[in-house]
Image 1: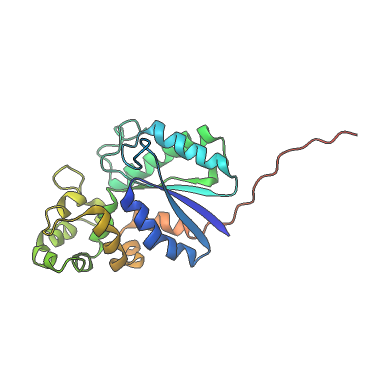
Image 2: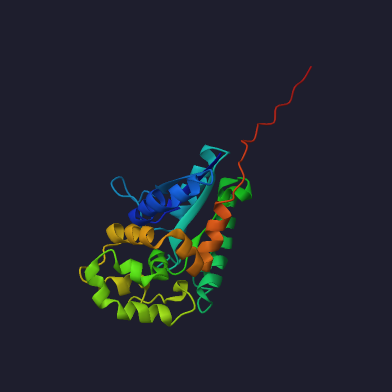
Length: 234
């Protein structure tokens, strides 16, 4: 049995893991659960800084030696405290995400002092909503009125090689485009519903960076807890 903890950015990712990812992974004997980073005593998710993420994931990795930990966080709006965020500007979305992931892996593994294969960072270009552009028709099925407003969404998808390229400005990020829909797109409510309608097969087909992450975590080998070194003396 493989146990995987997915550290998400907010309630949307938490619901997506529970309702969409976990059932698919479970069918492959990978048992996934979501955790959100507490930002205060009352709130979880959002306001992610490198220090907060590193500490939370590091402590999670230290709790048990036989679990994997991964992340599901957005490239769009990622805090500048994450190494590589500023230096990678101008690179393609997947290249940027992969660069930040490598540096985050160094930071977390160095803090946790764990086996490096136990932490699998994933930064989604540009954000969770990019996955929903994998199939605009099924996305709009969530609210039938959206079909009448789908032309700009179809055009945005057609303008790029894959949904993960849809740009990340405050006006044209995937979530910002969806928020113009009426009834208004509600991230926590509509996002996981749309992802479930679209299906992981279609999302993986359209979103290569997400596909690489999914294909990796779905085939993780079971971990054995390391035994402490005990010296015996006669």
